Amino acid sequence: MQRFNVAVVGATGNVGREMLSILEERDFPVGEVHLLASERTAGTRMTFRDEELVVKNLADFDFAGVRIGLFSPGASVSAVHAPRAAAAGCVVVDNTSFFRMDPEVPLVVPEVNPGAIAEYKKKGIIANPNCSTIQMVVALKPLHDAATIRRVVVATYQAVSGAGKAAIDELMEQTRAFYIPGKEVLPKKFTKPICFNLIPQIDSFLENGYTKEEMKMVNETRKILDPNIRLTATTVRVPVFNAHSEVVTIETERPLSPEQARALLAAAPGIEVVDDPATLTYITPREAAGRDATFVSRIRQDFSVENGLQMWVVSDNLRKGAALNAVQIAEHLVRDHF
Image (cartoon, rainbow, N blue to C red; front, top):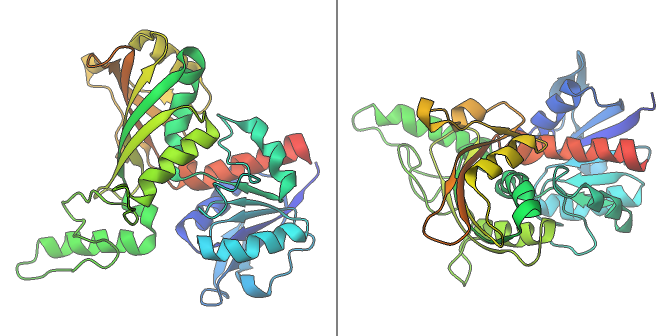
């Protein structure tokens, strides 16, 4: 079997660690693996396939001889080093937001638009969508193919892991302090306390009243799935460690019953339908954490509009929402394009 040298950029972060784990789990045909991060965390030791590896400084690394780069270092870092890696012959799968709306960079979810991967040759870069967008379009794709979605209204309930390790630590510290009279941990990562609370803001506000996270969902969905879809989003941070949840309401051109939708979703790649109200069977983020599927529950008619459906969509934001999606793209590259 042919093997390919791989670089994991941002290896010491939550997503980078998950990428390394998934490469091993899925037995990706890795030759050499290079772990790269900032000067601050260079020298950290990590394990891959029972071998201890030392994290190297990204700024000094020569990408010659590396075939695939899995990047998750932050947008400003990818802006500098992804083109540098691509120029050396490394195909970059970038998890940051920097290249997503570049018309010459494909934005890919393998279950939805795998054909777009071929466009990597334009710049040597493929963009991974936003975590909340990924799980939503996986669930929308089979319904759009069957009945053409005209409009989407989505509200997200997003785990703190989507904001990095500092956000996880903040939730843990505030939760512990909550039970100690007189002790308080002030928010640093978030604008308000996240413990036992909801924050209706993810990323900064724009002039139109939406946040950047909300507009990412709008623009990325149109690029991946269909530019004619109308979409509005409200994104909320919730005190959950891992796995994002979404209430997704759709309007379709042609009628689609809940039974038909359930059958379409159950047959689609990457989706598990967990939906039986009679037995209180539905998915929660705690149950979805650590698993690869996009889970769909509470599939029902929306009686407020013609041809309306509503569903509950949950997925692990570090896996399918980031690391797994990137590795799946890499798997398509080695199988279909190299």
